[in-house]
Image 1 (tube, rainbow, N blue to C red):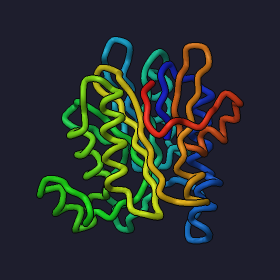
Image 2: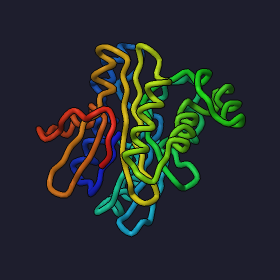
Image 3: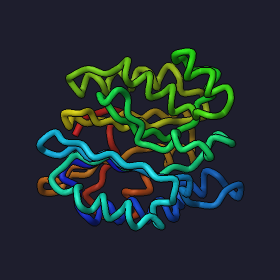
Length: 238
Protein backbone atom coordinates (compact mmCIF):
# COMPACT_ATOMS: atom_id res chain seq x y z
CA UNK A 1 0.00 0.00 0.00
CA UNK A 2 1.30 3.44 -0.94
CA UNK A 3 0.14 6.98 -0.22
CA UNK A 4 2.18 9.69 -1.91
CA UNK A 5 2.16 13.38 -2.69
CA UNK A 6 3.90 14.13 -6.01
CA UNK A 7 4.66 10.42 -6.54
CA UNK A 8 7.43 9.19 -8.81
CA UNK A 9 7.67 6.25 -11.17
CA UNK A 10 10.13 4.43 -8.94
CA UNK A 11 7.60 4.46 -6.08
CA UNK A 12 4.92 2.98 -8.32
CA UNK A 13 7.38 0.33 -9.54
CA UNK A 14 8.15 -0.55 -5.91
CA UNK A 15 4.43 -0.92 -5.23
CA UNK A 16 4.03 -3.33 -8.15
CA UNK A 17 7.08 -5.32 -7.06
CA UNK A 18 5.80 -5.55 -3.48
CA UNK A 19 2.42 -6.81 -4.68
CA UNK A 20 4.06 -9.49 -6.85
CA UNK A 21 6.34 -10.78 -4.10
CA UNK A 22 5.90 -9.73 -0.48
CA UNK A 23 8.70 -11.29 1.60
CA UNK A 24 7.50 -9.73 4.87
CA UNK A 25 4.01 -11.01 4.21
CA UNK A 26 5.42 -14.44 3.41
CA UNK A 27 7.07 -14.58 6.84
CA UNK A 28 3.75 -13.64 8.44
CA UNK A 29 1.68 -16.13 6.43
CA UNK A 30 4.19 -18.98 6.53
CA UNK A 31 3.48 -21.70 4.00
CA UNK A 32 -0.28 -21.11 4.04
CA UNK A 33 -0.40 -18.70 1.10
CA UNK A 34 1.60 -17.53 -1.86
CA UNK A 35 3.74 -14.43 -1.10
CA UNK A 36 1.81 -12.05 -3.31
CA UNK A 37 -1.31 -9.88 -3.45
CA UNK A 38 -3.40 -11.27 -6.34
CA UNK A 39 -6.96 -10.30 -5.37
CA UNK A 40 -7.33 -7.03 -7.26
CA UNK A 41 -5.93 -3.55 -6.95
CA UNK A 42 -6.94 0.05 -7.35
CA UNK A 43 -5.99 3.68 -6.97
CA UNK A 44 -7.42 7.10 -6.34
CA UNK A 45 -5.62 10.14 -7.74
CA UNK A 46 -6.48 13.61 -6.49
CA UNK A 47 -4.98 16.14 -8.90
CA UNK A 48 -3.72 19.56 -7.86
CA UNK A 49 -6.94 20.96 -9.37
CA UNK A 50 -9.06 18.78 -7.03
CA UNK A 51 -10.08 16.49 -9.86
CA UNK A 52 -10.14 12.82 -8.94
CA UNK A 53 -9.61 9.67 -10.97
CA UNK A 54 -10.68 6.42 -9.36
CA UNK A 55 -9.89 2.91 -10.60
CA UNK A 56 -10.35 -0.63 -9.30
CA UNK A 57 -9.75 -3.95 -11.03
CA UNK A 58 -10.04 -7.63 -10.02
CA UNK A 59 -6.80 -8.35 -11.90
CA UNK A 60 -3.46 -8.53 -10.09
CA UNK A 61 -1.68 -5.21 -10.47
CA UNK A 62 1.32 -6.79 -12.22
CA UNK A 63 -0.90 -8.15 -15.03
CA UNK A 64 -3.16 -5.12 -15.54
CA UNK A 65 -1.43 -3.13 -18.28
CA UNK A 66 -4.50 -0.94 -19.12
CA UNK A 67 -4.86 -0.01 -15.46
CA UNK A 68 -1.18 0.85 -15.10
CA UNK A 69 -1.36 2.90 -18.31
CA UNK A 70 -4.27 4.87 -16.84
CA UNK A 71 -2.35 5.45 -13.61
CA UNK A 72 0.73 6.61 -15.51
CA UNK A 73 -1.34 9.25 -17.33
CA UNK A 74 -2.53 10.93 -14.15
CA UNK A 75 -0.24 10.33 -11.17
CA UNK A 76 2.17 13.22 -11.81
CA UNK A 77 1.74 16.24 -9.50
CA UNK A 78 -1.05 14.59 -7.57
CA UNK A 79 -1.86 12.87 -4.32
CA UNK A 80 -2.06 9.12 -4.93
CA UNK A 81 -3.39 6.23 -2.85
CA UNK A 82 -2.77 2.78 -4.31
CA UNK A 83 -3.60 -0.63 -2.82
CA UNK A 84 -3.11 -4.25 -3.90
CA UNK A 85 -5.34 -6.74 -2.12
CA UNK A 86 -4.66 -10.10 -0.55
CA UNK A 87 -7.81 -11.63 0.87
CA UNK A 88 -7.68 -12.40 4.58
CA UNK A 89 -11.35 -13.29 5.06
CA UNK A 90 -11.97 -16.35 2.91
CA UNK A 91 -14.81 -16.05 0.43
CA UNK A 92 -14.74 -12.27 0.07
CA UNK A 93 -12.20 -12.33 -2.78
CA UNK A 94 -14.93 -13.06 -5.34
CA UNK A 95 -16.74 -9.80 -4.59
CA UNK A 96 -15.11 -6.87 -6.36
CA UNK A 97 -16.64 -4.30 -3.98
CA UNK A 98 -13.89 -5.31 -1.54
CA UNK A 99 -11.15 -4.04 -3.85
CA UNK A 100 -9.54 -0.91 -2.50
CA UNK A 101 -9.24 2.04 -2.21
CA UNK A 102 -12.78 2.26 -0.86
CA UNK A 103 -14.52 5.61 -1.26
CA UNK A 104 -17.14 6.90 1.15
CA UNK A 105 -19.66 9.43 -0.20
CA UNK A 106 -17.00 11.00 -2.43
CA UNK A 107 -15.59 12.57 0.74
CA UNK A 108 -12.71 10.31 1.74
CA UNK A 109 -11.01 7.19 0.34
CA UNK A 110 -9.14 4.60 2.37
CA UNK A 111 -6.66 1.81 1.95
CA UNK A 112 -6.59 -0.74 4.72
CA UNK A 113 -4.34 -3.66 5.67
CA UNK A 114 -5.35 -5.87 8.55
CA UNK A 115 -7.90 -8.37 9.74
CA UNK A 116 -10.48 -7.54 12.38
CA UNK A 117 -13.34 -9.97 12.99
CA UNK A 118 -16.36 -8.29 11.35
CA UNK A 119 -18.52 -9.51 14.24
CA UNK A 120 -16.54 -7.19 16.51
CA UNK A 121 -17.13 -4.08 14.43
CA UNK A 122 -19.90 -1.52 14.33
CA UNK A 123 -21.47 -0.38 11.06
CA UNK A 124 -24.94 0.36 9.62
CA UNK A 125 -27.21 -2.70 9.36
CA UNK A 126 -26.91 -3.13 5.57
CA UNK A 127 -23.12 -3.38 5.86
CA UNK A 128 -23.31 -5.71 8.85
CA UNK A 129 -25.65 -8.07 7.02
CA UNK A 130 -23.34 -8.28 4.02
CA UNK A 131 -20.31 -8.80 6.26
CA UNK A 132 -22.06 -11.66 8.04
CA UNK A 133 -22.70 -13.25 4.63
CA UNK A 134 -19.00 -12.87 3.69
CA UNK A 135 -19.93 -10.57 0.83
CA UNK A 136 -18.18 -7.59 2.38
CA UNK A 137 -14.87 -7.84 4.19
CA UNK A 138 -14.03 -5.94 7.37
CA UNK A 139 -12.87 -3.06 5.14
CA UNK A 140 -16.50 -1.93 4.89
CA UNK A 141 -16.73 -1.32 8.64
CA UNK A 142 -13.29 0.30 8.69
CA UNK A 143 -14.38 2.67 5.92
CA UNK A 144 -17.49 3.58 7.87
CA UNK A 145 -15.37 4.26 10.97
CA UNK A 146 -13.07 6.53 8.95
CA UNK A 147 -16.04 8.54 7.71
CA UNK A 148 -17.17 8.98 11.30
CA UNK A 149 -13.62 9.97 12.25
CA UNK A 150 -13.25 12.39 9.35
CA UNK A 151 -12.41 16.04 9.99
CA UNK A 152 -11.46 18.76 7.52
CA UNK A 153 -8.15 18.96 9.41
CA UNK A 154 -6.28 15.82 8.30
CA UNK A 155 -4.20 15.54 11.48
CA UNK A 156 -7.42 15.34 13.50
CA UNK A 157 -8.67 12.61 11.17
CA UNK A 158 -5.41 10.69 11.61
CA UNK A 159 -5.60 11.02 15.41
CA UNK A 160 -9.22 9.86 15.41
CA UNK A 161 -8.39 6.82 13.25
CA UNK A 162 -5.47 5.97 15.54
CA UNK A 163 -7.83 6.03 18.52
CA UNK A 164 -10.29 3.79 16.69
CA UNK A 165 -7.54 1.29 15.85
CA UNK A 166 -6.40 1.21 19.48
CA UNK A 167 -9.96 0.37 20.51
CA UNK A 168 -10.66 -2.24 17.82
CA UNK A 169 -7.48 -4.06 16.80
CA UNK A 170 -7.39 -7.33 18.77
CA UNK A 171 -4.40 -8.52 20.76
CA UNK A 172 -1.90 -10.35 18.59
CA UNK A 173 -2.89 -8.49 15.43
CA UNK A 174 -2.35 -5.20 13.63
CA UNK A 175 -3.91 -2.83 11.12
CA UNK A 176 -2.98 0.12 8.93
CA UNK A 177 -5.24 2.78 7.41
CA UNK A 178 -4.20 5.33 4.77
CA UNK A 179 -6.68 8.02 3.71
CA UNK A 180 -7.04 10.85 1.22
CA UNK A 181 -9.97 13.24 0.89
CA UNK A 182 -11.49 15.08 -2.07
CA UNK A 183 -9.29 18.12 -1.35
CA UNK A 184 -6.08 16.10 -1.47
CA UNK A 185 -5.58 16.06 2.31
CA UNK A 186 -3.90 12.79 3.23
CA UNK A 187 -2.77 10.90 6.29
CA UNK A 188 -2.39 7.56 7.97
CA UNK A 189 -2.51 5.60 11.21
CA UNK A 190 -1.24 2.18 12.19
CA UNK A 191 -1.50 -0.06 15.23
CA UNK A 192 0.19 -3.36 16.06
CA UNK A 193 -0.57 -5.24 19.26
CA UNK A 194 1.77 -7.94 18.10
CA UNK A 195 5.30 -9.31 17.93
CA UNK A 196 7.38 -10.48 14.98
CA UNK A 197 6.75 -11.31 12.19
CA UNK A 198 3.47 -9.36 12.32
CA UNK A 199 5.20 -6.23 13.65
CA UNK A 200 7.53 -5.94 10.66
CA UNK A 201 4.58 -6.46 8.33
CA UNK A 202 2.31 -3.80 9.84
CA UNK A 203 4.86 -1.06 10.42
CA UNK A 204 4.52 1.92 8.11
CA UNK A 205 7.43 3.89 6.71
CA UNK A 206 7.65 7.53 5.66
CA UNK A 207 9.73 9.00 2.86
CA UNK A 208 10.62 12.50 1.71
CA UNK A 209 12.82 13.51 -1.19
CA UNK A 210 12.61 16.77 -3.17
CA UNK A 211 8.88 17.52 -3.66
CA UNK A 212 7.81 13.91 -3.03
CA UNK A 213 6.46 12.77 0.31
CA UNK A 214 5.08 9.29 0.89
CA UNK A 215 4.02 6.77 3.47
CA UNK A 216 3.99 3.09 2.58
CA UNK A 217 3.70 -0.41 3.88
CA UNK A 218 6.96 -1.98 4.96
CA UNK A 219 7.39 -4.14 1.86
CA UNK A 220 6.98 -1.18 -0.51
CA UNK A 221 9.71 0.68 1.39
CA UNK A 222 11.89 -2.44 1.29
CA UNK A 223 11.41 -2.89 -2.46
CA UNK A 224 12.08 0.80 -3.16
CA UNK A 225 15.33 0.57 -1.26
CA UNK A 226 16.04 4.28 -0.74
CA UNK A 227 17.77 4.92 2.62
CA UNK A 228 15.53 7.98 3.06
CA UNK A 229 12.73 5.69 4.30
CA UNK A 230 12.21 5.96 8.06
CA UNK A 231 9.81 4.20 10.40
CA UNK A 232 6.66 6.33 10.54
CA UNK A 233 5.07 7.57 13.76
CA UNK A 234 1.85 5.72 14.54
CA UNK A 235 -0.21 8.47 12.91
CA UNK A 236 0.48 11.51 10.77
CA UNK A 237 -0.23 13.47 7.58
CA UNK A 238 1.50 14.17 4.29
